[in-house]
Length: 328
View (cartoon, rainbow, N blue to C red):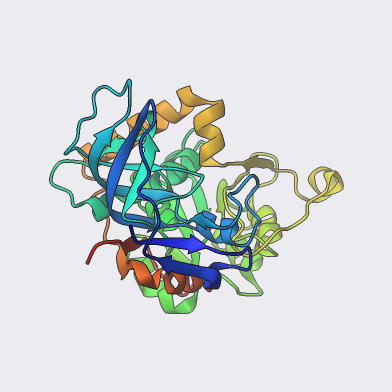
């Protein structure tokens, strides 16, 4: 089968299209999916650069998120049959290919009437945004939320849901993306790389700061996020580090940033707190049923252009969800 193989840890430029990858076979409790759309995520970049803890070692077939049609099932699988369309995540990779093996327990059915590519986000971006807002961030009507990278897949979902929950949203994005973010309902839009980000947030909040910050920008933006949150009651949920690592000390938390600092990795949440993840997914499907969330509209690339898609994502040159299409 055709697949994208990561050949080094020097980044996505060393992602190579191969045509002789073996088609995987589902083991007990697994399903084999003919991939019609694969989601592109920052995790893929982290794995390609060796910065994702416990990530696969080259050479490996890249891609963690795939959607498509089940073609066969392994021993012990019930409730999922060949012909069913699902979306799922395999953190070890394998989605940037024509076929992908997934644990049956992690597969989610593609909603009726949706194309497979429209479901990308159901198991990564949207649950991450919702977990950050609700069980961890404790968003409530009347509160103010600062959402970084609001034009990205997770940011757009978070913005939509935060407005649904009655929050005032301050969103950050690069200037070229401001109109898009406003069209999604942001109350205020700031330059994500502006030097006066904290002062602008304080001006918009009357000097109080925000109740909640959704932090995925990383790098120096993390400290701006901490400084933008309300003292004592403000929450900062960190779920990404697109701009690189940043350091915070116990001195900072005691004397400079007296806030609630919360780390979120959706894979760890699934494993360590399955009941909370169940609540998140239940809430998410309620939002789908209510029409708050609808079919995604990813920007699509042919499989061979996977390296280009990842490089553009790393450069923050994209908006919304990105998808690779293994079949013409």
